[in-house]
Length: 244
Image 1 (cartoon, rainbow, N blue to C red):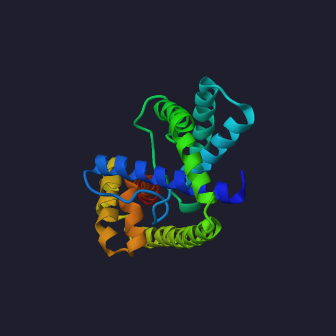
Image 2 (image 1 turned 120 degrees about the vertical axis):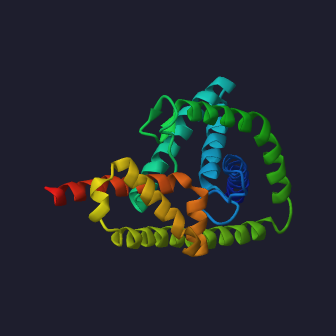
């Protein structure tokens, strides 16, 4: 694969992934939601996963069963690693499968892993042949390289702005947390009650946040839940120490 071919394939699958995330989350919340780490129409985890799958199929000539098995395992590992990295960077989980059976630390679950495998199989068997022809068509055009450079520049700018929003959100939440009193009436509250109050507090400040930070919290409600749970757990420890 040429660099231009890789770029086009990455952007197309990232866009498809964004569409899938937007549709599924909008249905779940009952309103339009711009899902994804980036502001624009790209979910790069899908683009990266698709490229690895394409390379795997091209280099091994894998059978459908092998595609399914590799997709199930590899894409689950990618999702798990992404969850760990994002939590370590921003202090909370952006999504959680804790409510699903047979999950691993709430980061991946058997159901989602099987879905990844089926999605990989469907993409490689039915979608990739069409996308390969589409990319080949674009590569035959005289301005294909220029277009890929323009899209790449937009992607990098969007990623930088989205990263800045995520870092800013972490700082905003830290400021909110520092202003929370941990004594008084909260002495008599359970951890679940604290979680409920902290969640309501975070949701209450969403309209006051910058647009990029607001979008992230709306797109990832599990980020709000996990942040509230961690604040509650930490708050109970502080209250218990004060009460002694």
